[in-house]
Length: 224
Image: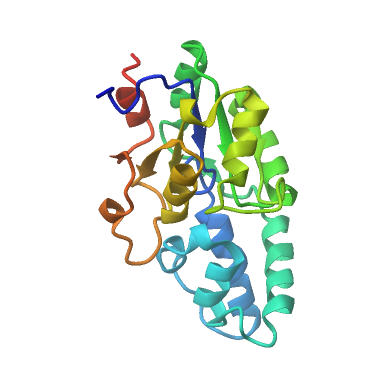
């Protein structure tokens, strides 16, 4: 049997919780809503595990509302406006990410981004960090009619790169990333250093590999 990474041609990454740590800004926008309503502030740790769920996760923590709440859509729009206003205040790449993508580029391994984050937020965020200029594809949550765990965004990234899905590996910090990657016919890597979600059992996701830091991707690919 061929090794798991035989024939690999490209690496695709999730964005939030995999390449960049956006939890400080995601959480702060939600905490502003708490404070404006007279509720006490919560620490970032309360928000971090839910950061991968976007507005839905942040509103659940901050205001204890779920999508079936009568005011959810209005609160969601308020949250998104607040997040957009502070999009780049404290968001930074995870340690090792810039070196990782520089080394992939140096070795001629194309890489790209597939995120459920809307282009409204993804485009300014990626433009603000120079290393994203080397990404061969950036697929946002509204690029295709579907979001992960549907495979369509990953298939679109492979199409943009001119590569077969089977030649790609997808790295993400959520179970839906593994589900999407497998559905797209790609190999998958679970980013165990990311947000993961409350109570996540990463070993049960069925990924081909798990990493505890971004640079471990290079070891998996046997790149120096």
